[in-house]
Image 1: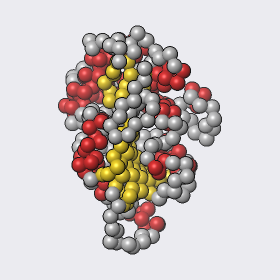
Image 2: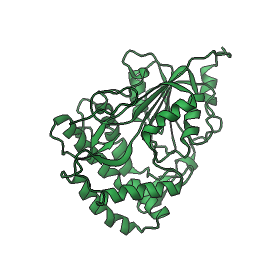
Image 3: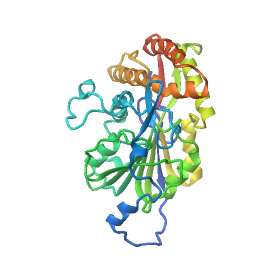
Image 4: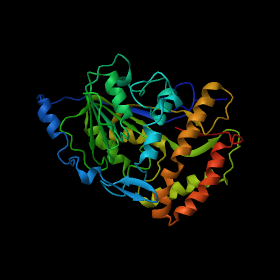
Length: 353
């Protein structure tokens, strides 16, 4: 029943584009060591310091949004979104994580790929990693987890919103910046990780070029992302339901806003064009709710239902009101039917992740 979609190399199981790419080794002509303290101070000369202008936010339709690069990213950064991304009660998911409250989306990903933070070699348990960059770090949970598992690593997380916790491992640092702009890191990384940036990146080629240019020879780049179009292998997902309309409107709004949802599998070819080698793509399915009979996939479906249901308003409110001209009341009324579809177990649908 559960297919494995293969592009270059694939695992058994369900679908989620987990791209990783390897930068071909080349001669390093510099060979100079840079003092760590001066490197930390100059890591991003164009990045704004954390000030009130960055830490501020604005309220729109009952949700709060980032102030830095105001309006660029359409998802909110308020407590509702943080609850989904990083401040959930751990009892909802795993009971063996006592040091942090959990990130539901993060836990779904790690559960999907065998309780790992990624598929690239730097995520192997015995890997020794130098500098690591987490792009679109959100609440910082991935960067924090990686820093704890790899105390030898120097981990940086970057995001438009300052939603990260105050107390983090000593080897983890966060900064506020826009990855669509030119990157100004003065030292390259050994591993760059990106997750759920579709709909947030203006120019994927430029993004990949920035990652390539800021990797050490032999470094790795991993992209974990989603196709937001629900799929069904038994044709039980109607193309005219509210959820299908919701996705179509999301895509139209995002395209008009300049941050389209991209064809994720096609990014593997773009990586190769930019210069990466050893490009692999791993695909999985996330059921939209608990419709599967198998325990593992039923659990994935229930988590996906909770995660997606919590995200529905945040994903669309800014796009539908700013771009499509909807009122807040119209959005809320429309979402009633969308949530019903997400819960409908007659729809044997899944997201290709």
